Image 1 (tube, rainbow, N blue to C red):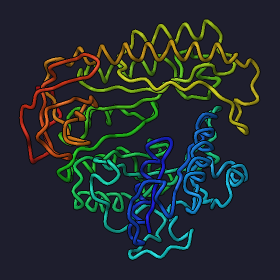
Image 2: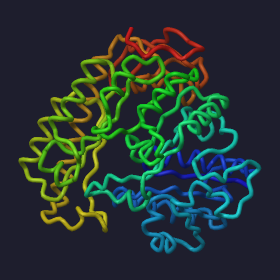
Image 3: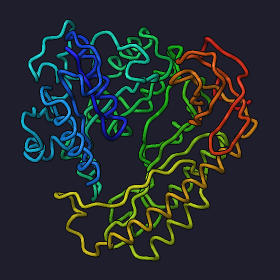
Image 4: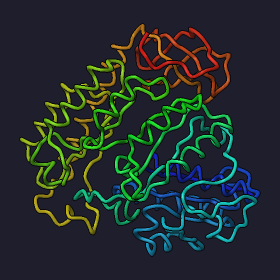
Length: 429
């Protein structure tokens, strides 16, 4: 059996696809291109209308190019609009999110290992490099109870559900044994980790447990809501030898009026204090954010506040989301829809600011020596603070290195300083 997995959306979906792939391998599968596969799994996103459209396009494409394949569609779009997905091509199997953890069984495959506990754990991890992936994305939580006014994900992922600390630590051992050297810890609402378990577990406690063990690996904390990024978490990362100085803290908007309409439980002043504190403590840290433009009621003054703050902020990476209605959300019924041309114009402006911020960060890092991990063919390094740096040939993927940033043009380039067989420290040299 040959399989192909096509993944859209967030890191949680990436983690889910890792888990699905492990199941398919345990069922005797081997990876193949979509046009040659017997089973094609499309793991969908539905955070925006463009995400829905991307799913429709790819399902039609693979159905046309490989009409004999079993096409299995899962994820948030498949959960939200199963009838729409089923009508995209002839024979499509729908596996909603609440059955995704055991997708192989849901489509009638028998695995050689146990995958039935529903918490994301499974047998032997797939090796680094399969399908081009070097780092592992580990989901520790799914679902969300936050109810932001624009977001459909709580209805597609359900209430928050966390894996127990012991299970997470066991999974890290499994992944380390497979040869991985870096793990991204992720969740739909990662900061809510442990609230549903009833045993006192918290995200901070989980991170502290990982820090105590270290596992000879580097860990990245995936997207974290600003109100969940506690001072103690910042302190832990600052003093850690295993956690990367890399934060992704979605702002969504800089206008307090827009934040209230979005039902985001913080103010710009709160966010500003948080990221300024991180930048002061860790001048080398990467600081990513998400921004929504064109939210209903967004006036010129609101956008001016966003534009002004973002350009002066310590943020280093910006993901821009043009607002689109998600039927069933509070925002879909709000008045004051922003014209599409204005939304596109504002998105272009914010993307330009994001490029400027990223270039500024790279200039600040010029000449610095950073630890990192080789990926792809070994000539690209992802540093601890999330820069992608080209180095000369000669190393395989999945090697610890230290690089000195030597060029900050359109493509970052670096000089190889050292190779290490232990996780390098994350402090600036």
